[in-house]
Image 1: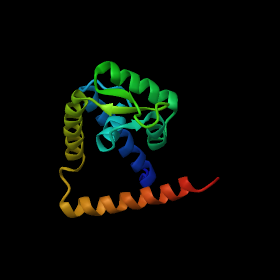
Image 2: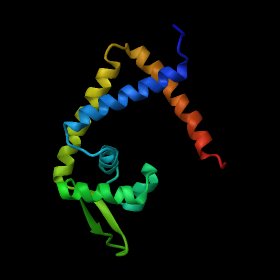
Image 3: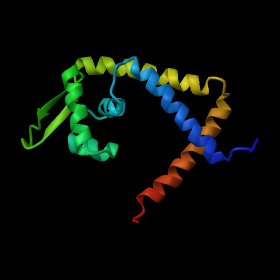
Length: 145
């Protein structure tokens, strides 16, 4: 059997992580992509849809659909900006804040499932490697062309 290269293994890790995360999140009855928006709002409540689009790097129409679904579920509300009535801002509701706690517990569970048998030193080493990979890609993605 031919030995896999690091990139093939990396792709497999991403795939398996995605499958596990979706399985855990399905228990929370979230549509794909809503969790990152909710977590973003838990850090910076009161963003415009444009700010969410820029931060998440997804289409405005996708954000609009997700916001509408989360409003329907009672997780977020939109309010006109006090200073500039042309803009609406998205805020977590009390229900949304409670939901964030469940979401964070789910992500903590996923983290433990992924790294539970790693020592602290191994976790730190892996974290450093992943940060370097992220930084390499970020530099390339920010370059023009």
